[in-house]
Length: 101
Image (cartoon, rainbow, N blue to C red; front, side):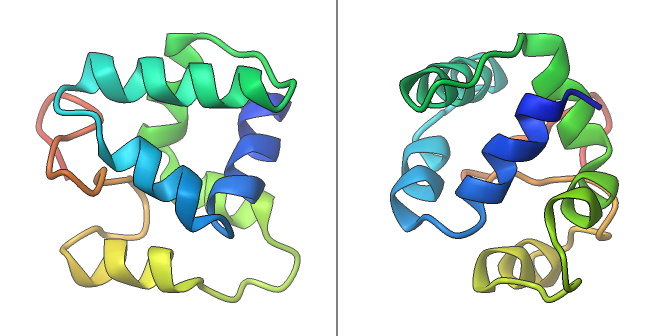
């Protein structure tokens, strides 16, 4: 998994502003664009395919991004909304990949 995506997620999971910005995407393409743009604002670069992979492997991403395994409120919301802990459901209800999560 792209190291910059991991670093970006470390920031996202603790920043309500970034979470809010990402949730503004109404389509997956908008979600990817917002993620790439917000990452670039903080000096991180990655591509759309990197975001797709991170969404598909959200559980792995979450483990790589945390030192203690503790879930944030954001992560608890994802899981309580029906996420299986392995993939990511963007807050707006769109899915990260074809069958959804």
